[in-house]
Image (cartoon, rainbow, N blue to C red; front, side, top):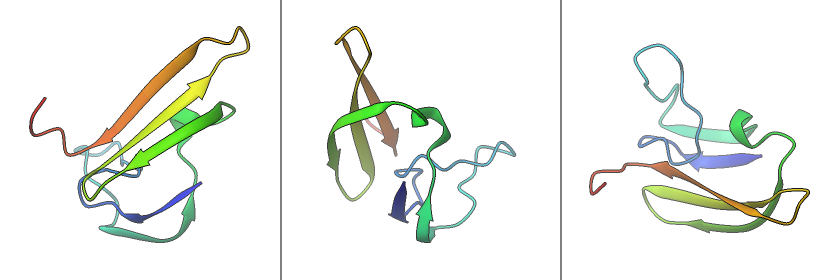
Length: 72
């Protein structure tokens, strides 16, 4: 569950319509559907981004990034 600023999609909550964030701030915790059921082992966050590292059952890792992406 995540909460906070979402004006640049940094909490990963994006509406399917036009790719817009449903609200600039999530005042209460919301689920990140793409991370549902995954074991999150590390988190990094800044003003306009969030990064999650997940661990798979076979001990491999996946990296998930969410946010502004203005620099690629």
